[in-house]
Image 1: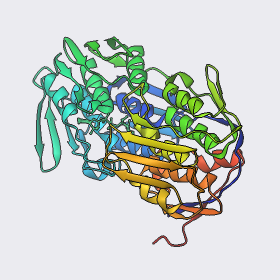
Image 2 (image 1 turned 180 degrees about the vertical axis):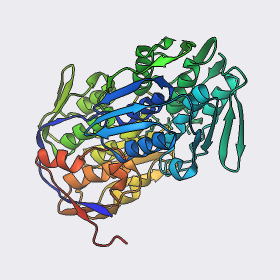
Image 3 (image 1 turned 90 degrees about the horizontal axis):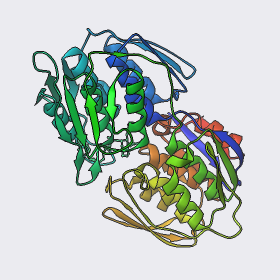
Length: 427
Ligand code: EPU
């Protein structure tokens, strides 16, 4: 098992390129199950989650050719319809083959994802959406068994939100299914995250008829077929935000090229308000050197365009070195605080109770051996390691490899002292 060895205390500086978006790539790659002809995707991030999805597509009978960020996929209308637990438990996003399989092949068996460190994470809204399109859905021995009615799915109306907000992958899943349903579907309280918008635009480019793209009310007029089109994946807003926070936490000048600052408004505004010098253009953003220590600012994570839950842990690491007190709440995943215990080991001062953490800064962070336990928590530990005095060993970086493409190379390119090693203590 690999670990990262980080020698902290270097001020990062320089420029780094944003990678393609993981959370846009996963549903868009799943959408290739709906398409006739060969889909040709560029700037697909080379990540473990992407390989898992490609493996699942192959198991579902797709021809997949992946090399250096270019992925070509060809899927027939006939083929297997099962996503087994062995795959789904490795990656929850596997669930987004449900809609495409049901729409194109008439049935799907998809293992029910269990809980994860973020909490219970149900998929009831995905299932409700499939039922609204006429599917029969049952859960048998931990597997969702869904069947389209004779003649295929038909248009329906569904609300895609729980009290925690709209579901991102649920919206993607139902949207993909609705594209091939007979008649018109109405998706209300749909997620408006940029990844959903990217999917909807791509589906429309392939011949779908989705209106209201970018908003919470999507109207889908079903079509008989969709034809594959080439696509360059959009940049990863969470990776870009993490890299900017790497600049901010070390007091350095880091420029992220090829990103989408318009999708990072909540982070950029907060960084600027905390006193980090910030500049951005259409497709770049950069942090500047601190003139004084930034001020700690609290936040509550919210659905887009609010502050993303996927940057909450990294913001907490940054808050630990800021002046003052920050109260951080996660309204999307109130249990997403596994990083707190590890940040405490590095000398952060954090009081955590329920879905809220109070960070007291500035704390002189110290290098320590820490354990990564989920993707974004791991990123927070890497950021803390960059700002800490001494050596930090971040263990189990396979979590990071699920969602950050070549993070150690990117940080090293900015002057960070980050090395990937074989963990001497791993089994
Ligand atoms: N929810 C329900 N019922 C459902 C679905 C969701 O109650 O059927 C609840 C969830 O429990 C949660 C909230 O609704 O409290 C939002 O969950 P959502 O369904 O939007 O999450 P997701 O689609 O499974 C995606 C990202 C996550 C990101 C969330 C929230 C992908 C592959 N995953 O998950 O990304 O945190 O949206 O923005 O797109 C990550 O990249 O590290 C990551 C976890």
